Amino acid sequence: MQTPTANSPDVKLVPRRTFQEGHSGWVWDVALSPDGTMAASASNDATVRVWGTTATGSLYRVFKGHSGPVRAVSFSPDSQRVASASDDMIVRVWEIGTGVVSRSFQGHSGCVRSAAFSPDGKLIASASDDKTVRLWDLASGNTIQVFRGHTGWVRTVKFSPDGKLLASASDDYTARIWDIQTGTARAVLEGHTDYVRAVNFSPDGTMVATGSKDRTARLWRAGTLSTVLEGHSSWVKDVIFSPDSKLVVSASDDSSIRLWTTSTGTACGKLGPVQGWERGMAFSRDGKLVVSTADDMIVRILETDENLWSLK
Image (cartoon, rainbow, N blue to C red; front, side, top):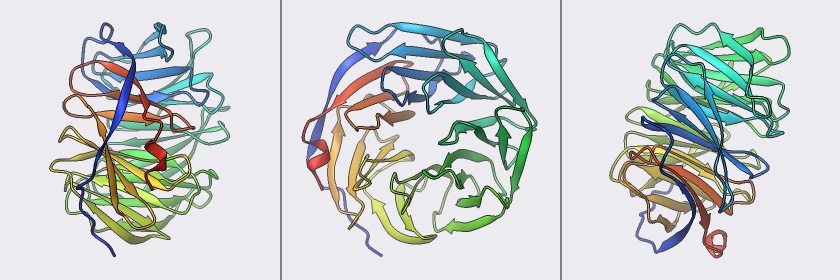
């Protein structure tokens, strides 16, 4: 197992669009549509907003209906819907074209902190403070599975690229890999020494990355710890892989976004500048576009430096 350091050069993020007027509360999460034309934001003001990502883009939709802060948003694979997770214990699915709610999933007994579409768009997974992960059928609205095993709040849930597995991150200091068909845990990822805030599968399906309040990000292969990524001086809030799975990107409350190679765990760059505590970020499928939000209620659309994905 390698433990690299983070002494590496900066790589510029180029601003494309900044949305300063909109949300009246902290923005907890952001997402990019798969087709790259829209960004969605989830806020403490109980709304979801959808924005155009072009240089002249503007606010497209405001979804109102949640009775508590919205913690997370996710686009459907066809870019036609947005799922939102809220403190009101409800997951809602919004139709972007019409602005209506097509599904409301109720069953959690605590704040819902994450919601994600399956790769085929037929399922929704949600993670909650009730220490469970739930799997819902979008067509019927029924619960398919309830995944139990975490002993703390579940912060994040993500589907594997083939849609057969779920990864969840929890305040119990672990991440878990779940089998969707059986409802059982394939692996318990143990090693972090504080809350696990973020988890993500690599696009090629061979790795899982986690980020923790212990100030580290970690790479796992086949359920086994591969690399500890050290260099952040505060909570790691998000972890994302590059489109080719050769880099992992970590965002932290230390106001930095760092890049690491997945083959060796070597620190190979920092993205910047960033604004304050990073609360959420997302990359487009081609890795050229970034949507980011910090602690200033502003949603930013940025373009990555043309040399970014060559730092391997």
